[in-house]
Picture 1 (cartoon, rainbow, N blue to C red):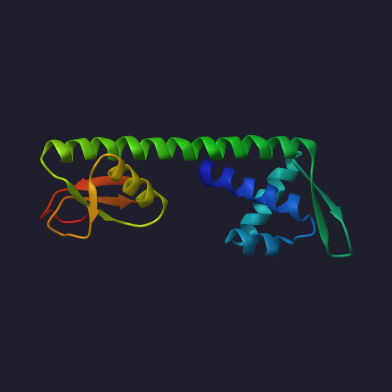
Picture 2 (picture 1 turned 90 degrees about the vertical axis):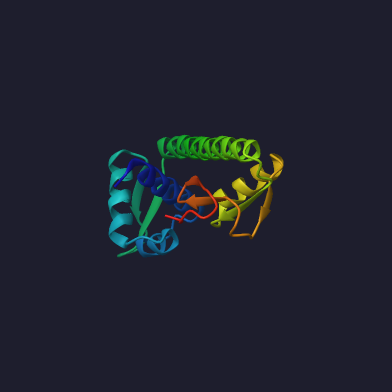
Length: 160
């Protein structure tokens, strides 16, 4: 597993446990959209590192409690998450601004946006700020959202 996903899952686990220590591993798995085994693996790591304590609430029911070290970890992971999101935002804005300058230099006043979600929203706002009209016209260059990136595709070129 990559570190970003691990950190994101651990942050989500810690937040969910903090909000409801009586959640089962199955509840946590459902909330996070992962397998129970994945939740179990992360919880074992968090317990081994002293970030979470496990107490038996009933015969077969466990209660998860975040330790002070776990609260500190949650705070660090939150700051890291916010930092990563701002870096992504800045990278997208910088890339789209460069594309917009290039398009304006080449005489284009319109661009088509292909894609949806947060990255597409950042593209749309950046284009508008740079004086490019966002249109639904296949004959103009377009910005294509690819995952967490953006590429400029000229008119007549194939998406890919």
